[in-house]
Length: 126
Image (cartoon, rainbow, N blue to C red; front, side, top):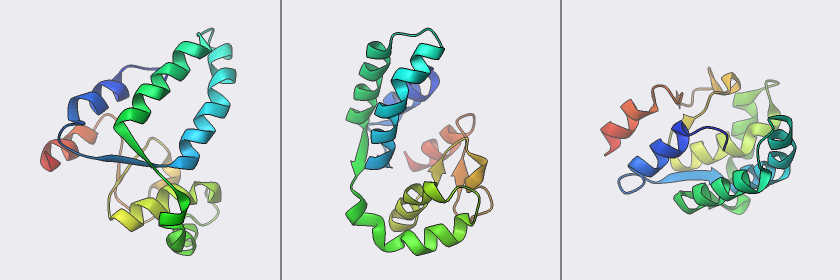
């Protein structure tokens, strides 16, 4: 929400690939954006409108669709950040990699791509 690179990548590839995120991630973003924007001296309303634009590209997935993978996701994450299990569970359900900068996903057996390299994957999926 606070930079242009992720939004540019999403917009560039939205016609060629599907993007997914657990609904809880969008809920968390809406909860934390106002505080983060304030600390960065940014307009929270404008930042939330960027989130709305991203929500039009990234499909929000309800927990009921991936919750059957919760145990496997929690096992893979271990004690790193157990609250990230919805992201891992969704990746397991869809058999897709995770686009993240969060190193807690590294070494879980789920492919990860960072923003500086994700276009390599997206071009291959195109």
